[in-house]
Image: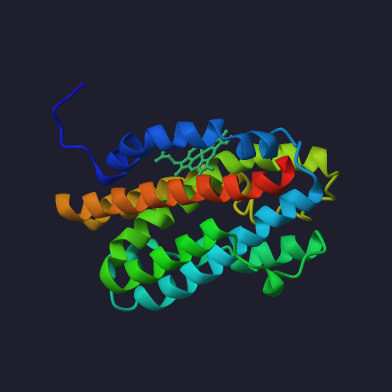
Length: 213
Ligand code: HEM
C-alpha cells in the first residue's frame, strides 16, 4: 500500500466494488451468464437496456457540448443504441415498442434530474455501462453457445470492440484520469456510478418477477 492519492478510476473501482460483486451474484445476471435465460427473457432485458442507452446517449451527445469533462471522455464509438437496435432486430423485437419496467422508469427519471442538476453523475453512469463491456466479453461467449448465434449476430452491443477491448478500456481510464476531477467532482462520479449499479440490479429484479410468478 502507498499513500499516493488514488486516481478517479481507482476510486470508482474501489468504491463500487461491493455493487459489482452484488451484480455478479444477482440471479438475473447469473442466469444470463450461464445461458439459462430464454431468448424472450434475454430480449426483454435488451429492451430495457435500449431504453436506458437511448435516453442517456441523447443527453450525453448534447451535454458534452457544454461540459469539457464529458467531451474528453464520451466518444462516439462508446454509444450502444444502434448496436442494441440491431441485436433486438435479430431477436425479433421492436425497439421502439419497448416499455420501461418500473425500475427503468425510475432510472430514466433520475437521469432526467441529473442532466439538469448534476451532469457529472451521468458520467458516473457512463463509467458503469462502459466498464460493463469488460465482463460482457465473457457473456458473449455464453450467449453465442446458448442461442447458437451466427457470427456477428445478436451480440453487437455485447462485444463491440472485439480484440481491442483492453486497449479501449485503458483509453477510457486514461481519459477519465486525465480530466483532473476535484475530490467533490469525484464524489459525484462515484454517486452516479453507484446509482447506476443499483438501478441495473432493480431492473434485473423486475425482469425476474414474471419468470418466477
Ligand atoms: C456475472 C456478471 C459479471 C461478470 C462475470 C463481470 C466481470 C467483470 C470483469 C472480469 C471485469 C474486468 C475486471 C478487470 O479487468 O479489472 C469487470 C469490470 C467491470 N464490470 Fe463487470 N461483470 C459482471 C457484471 C457486471 C454488471 C451487471 C455491470 C454493470 C452494469 C458491470 C460493470 C463493470 C464495471 C463498471 C467494470 C470496471 C471496473 C473497473 O475496473 O473500474 N459488471 N467485470
